[in-house]
Length: 194
Image (cartoon, rainbow, N blue to C red; front, side, top):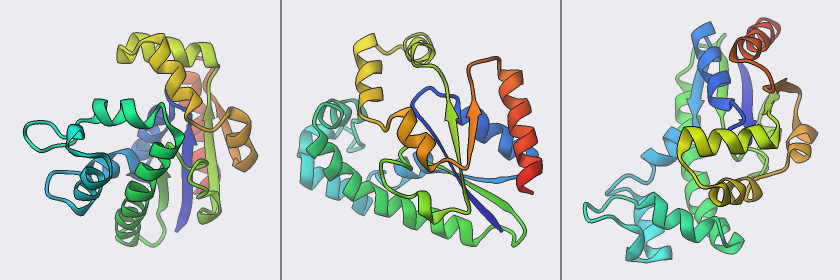
C-alpha cells in the first residue's frame, strides 16, 4: 500500500485531483465527508461541539448549523482550535478504519484540506499539494460557491499559506491552467506512484 496525503487551499482544485485519482483506481478517503459524518445528529462529535459552542450552533432538526459555527471559528483562531481538537481525532479514527479496509497493493489517498494546519504530513509516504493563484481561488469561491469576497479571504486567511504547504509537499500540482492540464498532471503522477 502506498499511503498519500492530498491537500491544497480552499478552491485550489483539490477535489478535481481527488476525483481524477479515484477514476484512475486510487482509494480516496475524503476527510471533509468524514468530518460531516462524525458530527451528524446523535454522534459524540456533535455532542462535544454543542457542549463547547452552545445550542446556537444547532438547527431546529438538531443537526449542525455549519454557517453559524463557521461564523464563530473562521473569525477566532482560539475557537477554531477548539473545534479542530474535537473533529480532527474523530476524522483520523474514521480514516484509519477505511484505510485498513483497502487492498494491500492500493494507492490510498487521504484528501485532507487542513493537512498542514493539523501537522499530519509525517503520517504519509508522500504528500501532494494542489496550488492555484490567489485571485483565481477568490474568483472560484465567489462565482462557484456564492461566497462574498470577505468570506473567501477569511477562509484563505484561516488556512496555511502556499509556502507552508509547499514546504511539506513531495509533489506540487499547478492548477493555474485548464482542467485538462490539471488532469494530465494527475495521470502522470498516478503512474509514478503506482
